[in-house]
Length: 247
Image 1 (tube, rainbow, N blue to C red):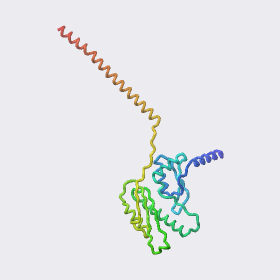
Image 2: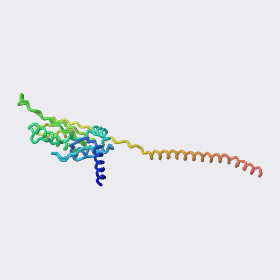
Image 3: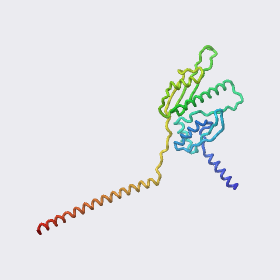
Image 4: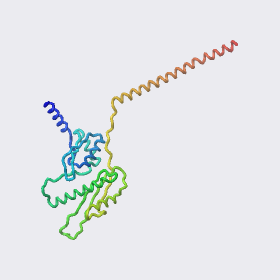
């Protein structure tokens, strides 16, 4: 019994070792979207819990080792994962600059989540930029800017100006005129071309042969009927002449 359990554990270890981890620390929305796209492309993808972050549970995206290159190619063409990995800092205390950067990153992710809830929006990325104060120009007005990249599944009624206004209202001091919005159409997953089974090829071949044989039989039958009709015609004429002569 112990030997069997040991073999089973070793087998599970080997199976796990055959998996390639593509991305770590992905939020649930990102990992599910990537997982669905890979499965639609015919790849045996899966996800594994890898802990928690300030934004909730995080996951690792895995595929069989033999499909790693294909999976990475599919994700790159689709622009996935849609949200950058979320990692918590291991520091007990952060510097003021690090706190500001973390808050800015959190705001970008929150805006991206909001934009992905819009119709036909497959993925969204938001980049916010705040200029640092210049000691030589203390009275200069520093205006924040933002860039938004949206990947769409299809046509949408939402306009770029509406997106800019939405982002601007979520950031203090940001004007809609300083928000650049770019919309692109996401590619569809690359679906595998199904290969015909060997049995179906044999059936198609047999069907073709049977069709040819049936056509040959029908043609031969028609030829025989025509020949019999042609041979019977002189006999009918001869019988008619004898009948006339005898009368």
